[in-house]
View 1 (cartoon, helix red, strand yellow):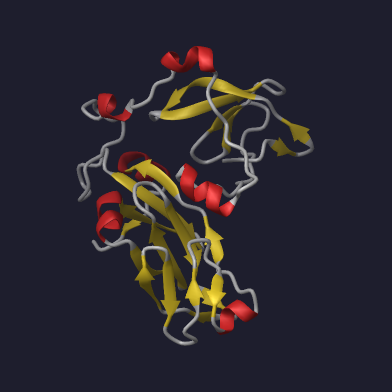
View 2: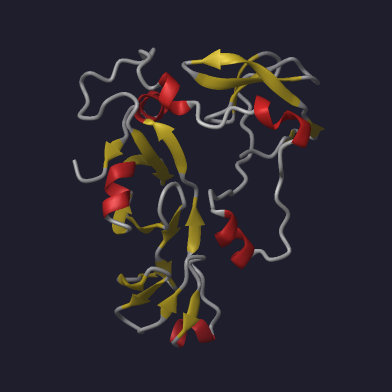
Length: 228
């Protein structure tokens, strides 16, 4: 998700085509072309410009209502519900990709969660996240936490509080506890019980991108793969 105001201009985007099997946008105001996956302008008067990322999550409606009871949900137009593509991914899985990944350990359409921290990229296989719901890792000397709520409901955090990394372990499906202070943490990355709760501590969230392996690797050629 990207903010659409840049260099003092608020841009209006439309689908312009596909580039490397990834959404390509064109803005009405300048006629420039933008890559959806990177937020970068790749052609036109604004070539080289970069859209600002807006933090976003993929959550179930149930989780969203718990965390944002006054939040709004965008629904499709009732009269066009049959026109919406509900499950298009299985249909394209057998198709060849335009990016060659034969020299890597993953098939091109393996689903991964990609994270970039300090200029270093790492991919986490969806199957690994399903089996290992809580992962403590380090990317570019930054200690991170990946916490899967099942499916694509995944959050990542910089797990440092006051400069010290937390050592966290699940207490149940909804909470983690840190080994040092014994504080309890919820899925928002905030302490709700213990010493850290008294200071209203929350971990800093990190952007996560669900992507096919071939696409993630195309835009992050130096990426590592967790556990490989």
